[in-house]
Amino acid sequence: MNDNARGALIMNASMAAFTVNDACMKAVTQTVPTFEAAALRGVVVVLALMLVARRMGGLHLRLPAREARIVAWRVVGEVASTVTYLIALKHMPLANISAIMQSLPLAVTLGAAIFFGEKIGWRRALAIGIGFLGVLLIVRPGTEGFDQWSLLALASVGFVVLRDLTTRGLPRSVPTVTVAIWSAGSVGVFSAVMMPFDGGAPPIAMAELGVILIAAACLVVGYLAAVGAMRVGEVGFVAPFRYTSLVWAIALGWLVFRQWPAGPTLAGAAIVVATGIFTLYRERLARRAATARG
Image (cartoon, rainbow, N blue to C red; front, top):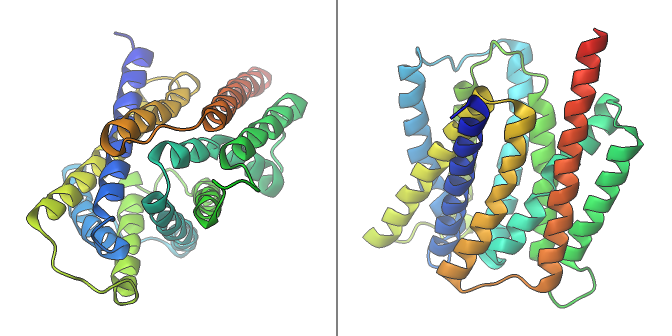
């Protein structure tokens, strides 16, 4: 198996782990307050990441002033995107919210063009426009299926764009696991602060605690696998396999929650995925051309 095949396999495993985490959190927040579940998950994730960081050569949580400001903005995006996503996830079918989140590569590309002045060309611009039409097909404004939870999912996409665009300003000298610990810890602390406004912290059954632990483990595995996949194979080949998360979401949504997405949702998701893959392909060609010129 070559590096690209290994990278694709690891990325598939990463997306499966992330989707199992989502399914666990959706299931447990039906009986446990959302912020309590998020706070407990955050504790486990931070402890696990700290162990990973030690095995990788020690913790480096103190950052220079410039890097600290960038991480602070990234944390804002991380906390806001996680909170809006978890609340929307509690009330939406798993496949529907996953389909909306597939627009992230398109949104990040558009954000980079708007805020960083990156050139995208007419082909990618057209693909982004068509992709967002696919998102409209998924959420279907003006129909019975469009509600405040759909808006929260869209808000989550916007906050993830803030997180990802901010991350571009971080130098490679800042360890990835350090950023992850700050992000996960901030989400956990914010969730703990919000617990009194979300039903407090009622006792949790062992079964519910077990589901939260599974969610935390999957989140850590998914994150580490995603980083590992991008380091094994070519980015342009491996990155499109992120879209396998939609397949996992549809499968788990049906197996666990007996929810099957409507026809327009599937059609919109197909449009978003197709335009996203095309955008990644065009970005790969643009990078190759820039390398050849330079």
